[in-house]
Image (cartoon, rainbow, N blue to C red; front, top):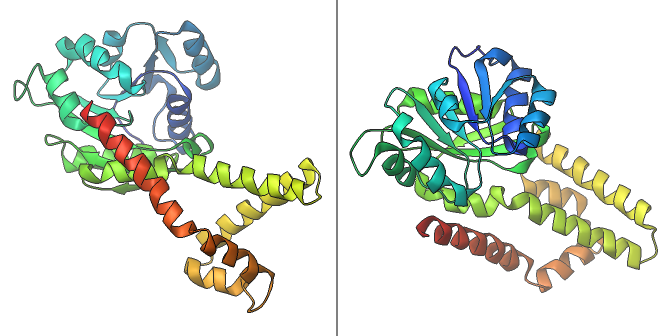
Length: 277
């Protein structure tokens, strides 16, 4: 990746901010001196400073003043107050990137711009997920109405340092939230259920956990690297009249596909509700 010349500021110093900063530094996108971070928690600032050696500040406005690109990594319910605090320091020459679930680009544009159409504010919204913490995130990126193609390309570069990216229309981000944003939790829940099944059928906890974790890791690598369709991979494991077919039949009889749809649909609906609130 080509090194960026912009100064990058982070509002919020939690796990996701730490992951993005570490990814950018590891990829050589930026140098430590190009990054500055603020947070209301001095403990969080000490942690991120010790891990990445970037500069930290306790004042959000100072971060905006010293940055060309500002990345919001705060809880969604804090965004209204954060935007109100930073509105006097926002300007059209700065790019604002938000990873706050359910917070739309118009919400940020209006509050940082001082009201509807008062000042054009460049905003890009990103829906990432927690595997970014290990460099395997999946991020969907959507531009606001004043963001340029260059702004989107910059966001793509940043989030490709911690995984893969796709650029979408913003109206699709609620579905992304329900699918890949919440998806790791579904994965963990299914893994937990398989581990419990193994234990109840006679394995020890450590035996069952090791087998399930390695099976999931191996299956994910096969799906990612083989170039085969998932249905083809599933068919390759499934012998007619065999054990896998018997297990899959139980999933089908329990309405597994419909259950997966309801899972994602419920989460996407909740994302839409939170956006409206």
